Length: 204
Image (cartoon, rainbow, N blue to C red; front, side, top):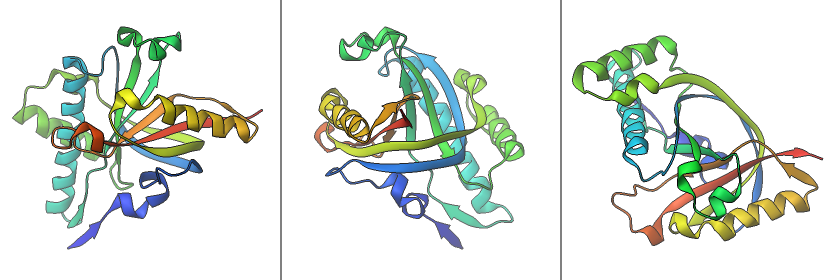
């Protein structure tokens, strides 16, 4: 059976170094996505994540057991973050945080397969958050990114490094702050968490 490691295939996007900030050009990918607002530690965010992974793993096993006979690793959880007032992040006003949680899907996953997976999960589990999911193409374009090691509460200096790098290149921030969570936070100690910090930019 053929196996694909997308984090290896897309190493420039999913395996950055923590030692430096680099530029990447992120093409269009299909994602399962859902939107919300508030504390990422809330039950609402947890329910969204559960729904995303439930459908993503269902799709994985549909492909593995189906005619394609292909095995692949489910991609990590990602989230886009924004707020009407940017100080909501620096001052920790989590109720004002807007998020889009999402998981990237392989190129052979389409709307039809996604609908089949939703139906399968609906039969097995009672997940209210399923109704809020969507299958959508997302293009990020040019961005700067690096790897943050440690808890989310200590991301500030890493985020600032990314922003300073963009400014030093004569570019301006655009789009939403993007995080990709490479660690299983249920198992790894916070000091070992690995999070990609990505910020899209535009030329001034």
